[in-house]
Length: 369
Image (cartoon, rainbow, N blue to C red; front, side):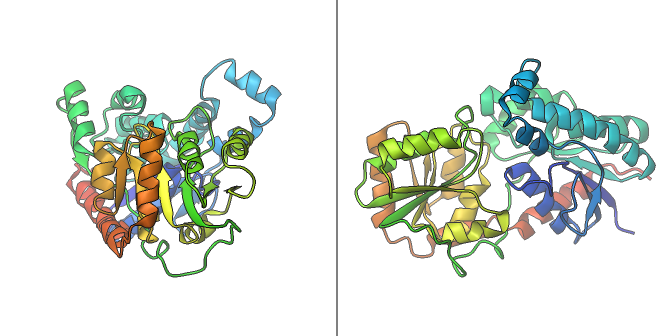
């Protein structure tokens, strides 16, 4: 009999704008080869979905577009969407897992899912597997908080984060497993998105929020220094208009486009560009880099340990806070013949390989009868 694994993410199926919900969906699909997997979510997103009602973060964020609602919610907490999702999912997901026992519980929605998992472990000794997707963002603030839940196995993306975890919690079991990419979905072959831009096109993908770590404004500045190069921004968020105004000021009309597309159409967007860039700071992993490389695009990114390993010889890293250095790297990436280097680099991160590593970890946990 296959072991029962409960994957939790209320947002999975409701939206595809975040890495954690996409990873939860992809992970559930590929772990189903090894285990009896149920993906607990607020909306139906696959044959593995078990729909359990709650208020996912995307629904709250949508409500926050109303300034009065946003003002009211943010008076009490800095991240109301995550808090509301956590509270409402805890009240509905916990009873479900009490009556529908599993062998391993794998929350993917931060402290909300971890809180559910801790209760189930207390009641039934069910081991907890958790992937820390925040990494060292905000100097490890989220990581330190989540460590307090003491998962039976914590998965991180690099040695730096593992060392940091052991400096805080020496007895915590930590495994290094990368994110995966769907090589069947992301490839150079297929339909391209019709963006209507002229010349070479630089693509960036990310949430359009001035307060996050994506630093899309740096990409805008870098492209503005290049001739006959346009910028395609794929994303959505509360500051779309801010970035549109900044693009118009720096690039001028006709040299940029901001688009929001369904996740199913994202591969078309990658295929329509010549180079991918994302100048994030403290990006925990960055599956968009993998998606870009799998689509055949060279990458220009922030010079840090994670990016150097992730991108390898399939792109360039630089000090993205230096506009001249950043724009020169983008120009070099556009002029160089990268051959199959991006595709070859992404091949090492297939979901099949990643799922096998997770399956080994799950099988090593102390499963209960």
